[in-house]
Length: 409
Image 1 (cartoon, helix red, strand yellow):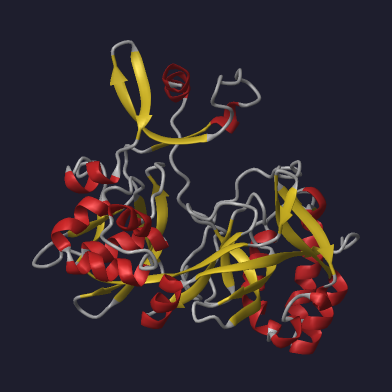
Image 2 (cartoon, rainbow, N blue to C red; image 1 turned 30 degrees about the vertical axis):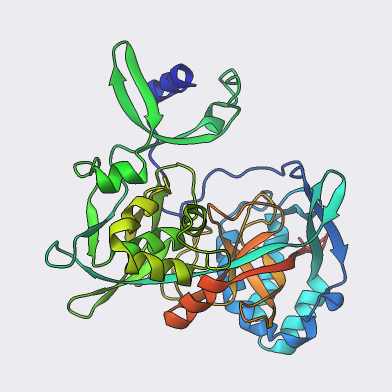
């Protein structure tokens, strides 16, 4: 890979597109993702459909509509049987904007949308159930300057980080044997005979060795390294400064290395017992064992970089991967290979206390651990209660994606 990618890097440098508000080139409908099945179902038969106040999901859906409005009418959203031209979304979004009650919302969903069960096909076996976890907007104590207890940096996007999208070369370059077309994050290293793209630094390199101190700005100094690690997992956070001001920070990019959950790391090391791998238990152990915490946190090589978010950007909540503010208990992170970002989704699972969690949500975020046909991460909001629920949630469930009925143009 090195020589081929090095040649590409020599030709052009690519910075990570950290602003999710930027719309990239439109893509036409893709073949159905292997291993994912979509089965039409009657909306009225959805588990718990009659019990949710679906009108409460309208603000989240309208945020998705704002993003869809920027797409060309002929652009295809979704894949296979759930692929629809953006024009059909423009039509239903205009109707959604005019919905003013629970009754009109239900009439709109029933008359203008089709629902599909999403399932995984493995070895000719169909399974519509998967795992649903929770996440939240992290809360931290911080300072704009280093001093006293504020010694843990939260870095902005490094200036020496390069993002290469091999799809940009698909039409003009020969396929790379054994690599295919994919995205790589790395750093350019000058060597004798040219430059090479090398993997970016790991968490241990960054936190223990300080290798990016000259290449990345610290956007805020945090009080607690464990809180920062949790921030990296959640992807966004609120930082309370010494003067009482609260600033919001959000995802700007990553080092591109594989994610390892800290709960699994501690379980494998034997410091936590089976059944103790929730984020609540993990946080408590790390904070109670600060001398060992860094060693285990560094075993997760993936590193997240952040950016300041303006109040205008975050009026409704933190920014998700779809480029809109997330709505507590109405937004969900998904694998976009299975569920198109922005689409309404009916969720059928349980909260961490075993109560049914059946409600209309919007697919507006992604996550490095959220992979698979049936896999979701429910956004609980922020604060201690949200952390407690998100940190304990790991539930079996299913979901159904809504798309405009055929002919809505």
